[in-house]
Length: 404
Image (cartoon, rainbow, N blue to C red):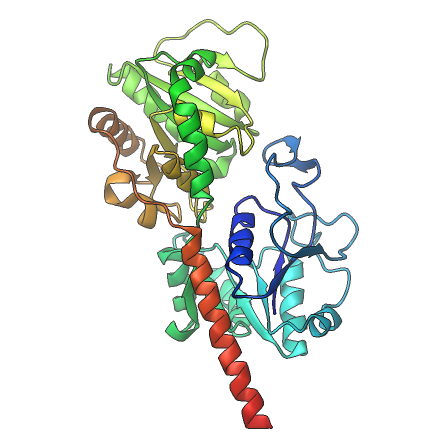
């Protein structure tokens, strides 16, 4: 049996658990630390309280573990185990415990518990080798992650930048298994197909002219995502009379919402019933669709002509790009994002924080169209997990034979 420990039912992870259950080759159970997102939960970065509008708890075996009071996946120390795992591990008959990174204290506790229980430790994290590290931080990070990685038996890498990080810490080829980051491509493709005949109506609802080149930013309005870079590129184009039909569409919420609105000529705002301000020259026209849940976000993907993800190095992957590609939408991605190498390539990426580069790429996509990469499939990850479990079972059988 494989025990999978994760912070909460995450909309991007659940399809993998469901696919693994349908496959049937690996007996497993998901152990959740919190119910964040299942019940209405506050998200500090979105500035909203919400729950996902898709079912995240059916189709696979799971349970919620005891944690400390007030546990939340958003804070390292607040997400801690409320019990030792050794007894639960032994009672379950688990051969391995799989954690989803190292961003909460419970994962570090779990490493000690798994080693004490004598089972393998598996890891699938998001971090990559793109972010520059200050010199003073490097020895500390190397010591911390070195301690963790030495206690992990198998590593599931989500992409090339993630793999390189593990390799720099001495993780061997034998320990590495590809599990590309993927979303439920079928669901997004079907939602987009159902909405595409209504594209004109969607645009009219948000004040987007039918003949405009509509560029979508989708996510949290926070510094890490750098949404203001998109506004700056649009303004640079407007000041030079380039792409006069450019229109920005923002789907999301967050701390930078007011600044974004002040920097645009807002023609529609789902969050404000007040009359729109006087239009200012050279400010790009923009529509603000508000926070959109999983079944709603396809409306934005269908209404837009291109998605831009301008995030910095804090964007360890960028699953919104997977969603957009599965929906048939062209994408431009900052080269600081973890997904850029796999999903954007040279033609679909731009230099992080380089406004002129982003502006020129927008002109090219508007005139020539964008190349659509093929987003990874969840089945690829299922195959790797099954191979890892087969390897583990063979090794466990060999150890039993040699100690008999």
